[in-house]
Image (tube, rainbow, N blue to C red; front, top):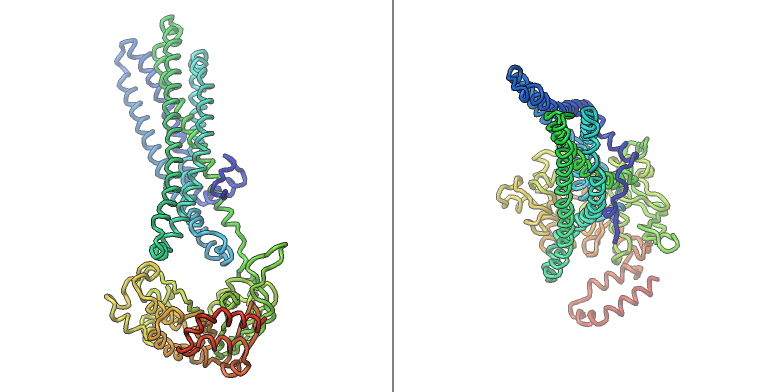
Length: 615
């Protein structure tokens, strides 16, 4: 399947180049220094063959030693100046390139943090990693050996042609007679390397996406014994990547020797024609030697410019992909002038006729996940949300935290639409505890405070003690300073869940949101967490999504979702008395052990009855 990683586009795009130069603008002083050093380096390279001509014609051929030593010193000074110019040019451009890479990566990462979850739903992580790594590296090549140094190549070519025509225009035309061959070889190289490079770039993105997906899911790969199958698939992608690189190596292996052959041919023609002129005394020997050196220097920038053409083309493609990411609109952001919640701000939450769809269906009609949802969560109230898988429970939480915006209706906090509030203010109200806890690399304490300097060490420990995480932390090698492996792989599911509770408590939220927070832990750990929840929910609004009805039976209110609609609402006893959906869910979960065998056989039938009774 073709993606934007496969497209190279034009070799030069003025619109993209203008945007790229914006990142170069803050470093204009360094660019100016680079231009000066390039001019010095070019002039030095032009002077050297001419000094050799003077040495041969004025001193060596005349057997005149007086003055030769001064000319030798001048030649050495030119070499030193050329070395210094090359050094400062390389240092300045590489330093500038690294700073621009830093600026670009920070701009991309800053934008990635602002994008809503809908963007991540449709873009694989591996492709985004390619933008931040490989594509930015390509732009570094553009700034360090493209935009500025191509000026030096053009200046060198123009200077050499001017000097050669000035010295002897006939011999210069002989030397330039090989330029059609150079044009043919260069065009062949550019055309084939462009296609090879396009293939390599696309395969790099595929490798990144494949590795990210399969390394993250390695436990599943090993459990279902997919190692051999996945290895074969990776082998196919990696083999294609290797072959594409080998193709590009072939073109480079042909191009540079071909340029050398043409350069040697030009030198041969200069010696043939110029040698006859020397014998006929219409050309000096020094001029012939200078012509040979100028000819050799003439073809270096041509080969460099061919290579820089590919750098330019790949940089245009990478910049287009990067700017496409940077131009991705931020669908969920704070308003220009955020509203203020009325003081005092108790945190009264209300859903008012909320509709939501993740994507459009056929004929552009939304596939509604939630339909006309209306309910209140009053300050200090504990609300449970239950329903079958896919009924929209987690979507409610995503909308409440403004990970997505509602399609119709509105969600208010203290009477103010959350879309009119600052995002930081909205999300600062909540602490979210998920079923799948995400831990970051760092220490245990770092994962509780998440970089918030306002949370002291004592507050971290108090939160851990409150949720009964302190005992297992104390058994770790370095306690709260123990390093946490990537994704918390060295901790059990229950331990990670306890850390997430400690994290939630440490931030002291106005509203606590639990999304299947106890569904992945064992019974003993669930009992510990239940006790911790009593502390955590005290004097705090709580919204809890649960499959285990035992965890929400004592809630002030329970909402029952079915097929995206709010079908029932009430306390545990009130819902049981209604003998509706909640009653059916309760009955299915709490059948006696003696009925378990019959339940396995009649489960499908019960589910059909449930569906028909709630349709």
